[in-house]
Image 1 (cartoon, helix red, strand yellow):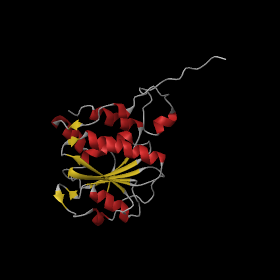
Image 2 (cartoon, rainbow, N blue to C red):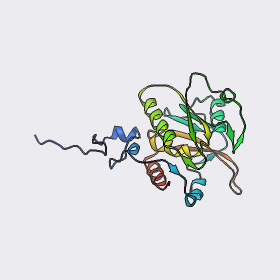
Image 3 (tube, rainbow, N blue to C red):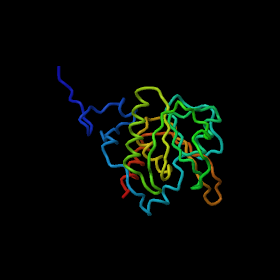
Image 4 (cartoon, rainbow, N blue to C red):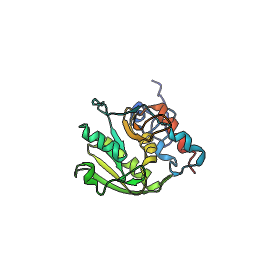
Length: 209
């Protein structure tokens, strides 16, 4: 009987549909976590990232698939919790549109049982520290059930949406706030993680300086 040689990913582990669905790799064996996905946001990329990555909604959908749910931003986190949806990962900084809105995490109605990670992520940047914490947190969630809070104590959380999408399992739902643009009002962007979206995010992050 002829042996079938397995195709290996960049980490010398087999390429499998299980790993693709888990968000670890793509079909060509690219391991997302093996690449530099942090740095400063270049000016020529800012207009692109101002565009929403998914549909913009004024309300939280009540029915969410049994997948990983992530909220990025204080308003998005509060909206989910008030709708009875507890995010698996909440990323907050106590600011809304760069103005201090809250004095403590307790004001966001986040349960004390959430495991808290404090990170520094300056405005217009993705730090290596914050990206690695996101990757590790998502990996932990895939292996055991728990809830995590990523508290940005210095800087902003906006850009953290990108590595979250890159590392999250396929089908995960990510919520983040969208400021008003021209005639379009503010709202909440609802992103379902797909293979195509991961590829798009990967190439965007490669342009960070």
